Length: 142
Image (cartoon, rainbow, N blue to C red; front, side, top):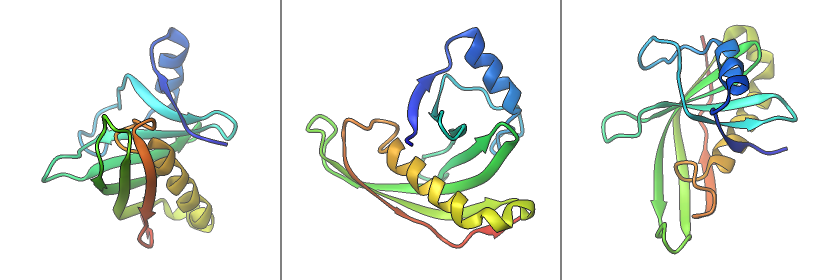
């Protein structure tokens, strides 16, 4: 079980994306993308809504066929060089929001988020990433 990067470059994948009906928390619009990270075995989608600048943390989502399972805000701290493929990364997650209806699955969802961020590495470049640590807060139920 692992999240792998897939391009959304075929009619089938575009239809799959549209079926999720994900709304970007940053824009309020239907989320559009050219790639995502998917765990096909568990039918989970890890998506990057945006952010990542000095003022705005990365905003991630974890979804399944029923829609968004959680939203997470995180900042990346790293050392190393991309060209040397030795990036050591810490994802400092500042906020995790889980729907109240999924509160009983919070531990599982946090575990899946940790896996997704680890597999995502640094900006989705797993080849340049030597190690990944993930710091998670307690979730907020919304």
